[in-house]
Image (cartoon, rainbow, N blue to C red; front, side):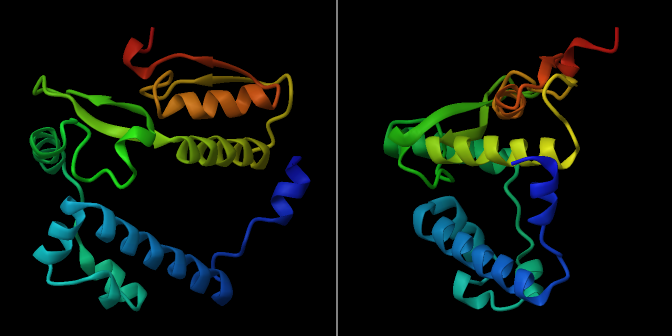
Length: 180
């Protein structure tokens, strides 16, 4: 799709039908993570809710839980002990379907596998980047410097692949390399 075609398909975020559909998808997502992840079931239990309790945007906002690095590291220890893998009890896909798993050790030296993609996740992420590039008006031959952290990792690589598929010259320059 070219930019004009992409722009025609950008929904009005204030449109009631769009908001209903987006909320329906969020409800489905909440149910999936609840069904598939011991860590997320624990998070729901800590706030005394289940996905069925999330019937409005206010209910969703009131959940108020987030996945912290401490949660992630604990989940990794638990999944290693119980499941023989270090990807964490927050993983919602079968472990053998995770194609990419990478993360950062931060200051602790213990890796946290924050970024994980199945084939479907990777394809969807590349498509989102393709649409974003077209929406921004990028065209074949344009030059983009990808200066994000993880520019060649799982955050930046899908963007780079999307740009390359569109014929956009994209060069990774990791933010970690400094400003020089």
